[in-house]
Image (cartoon, rainbow, N blue to C red; front, side, top):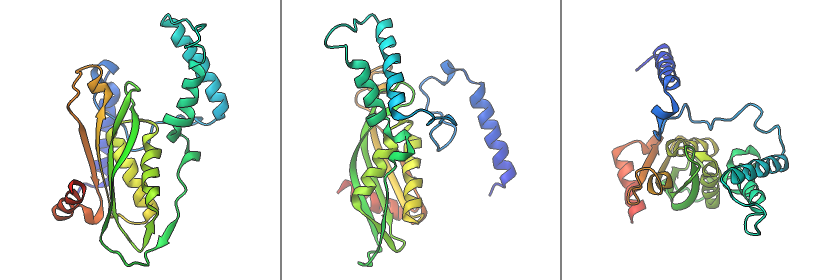
Length: 234
């Protein structure tokens, strides 16, 4: 097993390589520096209303540069609609205030096998081009003595999806949050998604999909992984 000094050296080397690459060299590659969404220290200095006002002004400038006539009835309200959508809807997961409140309950049924919530529909946006990622998330856990309301599993997926994302980061964020709130390492997350940055631009491949996974604790064995896939594909 690698010691902490070796791991630290590897992390420093990988960060140095990443920082040495230009935006063009990185391109559409799924490079990211860690599990946390990159946020400025003063990310919440402005209120939501102030952010919406600023975004509306800036988006109006973008539309103007593109040559669109903002005096037209169909476009006049677009900057405000986009700003509201950004803050209140599709990027609402950036604000910790919107994090789902989770309560655990005693596992009175003494159910000690895996619980699987499959086919959780989510919509996110690619961090590289701000175009949609659409897919299904499958999450599973084995109770450590406590259980969670099923809808909270969906809400945790949605919370982390509602921010500019890399699918690998999204998978790990959901898994780590579930491990924390469920107080167990026995968590699994599988995400199967289509990226519009692949299907609607660039290579324009509409048939491919991306699958990512996280297996923690008891799930990290071939037998449990196969059992989980049997549930999902049933």
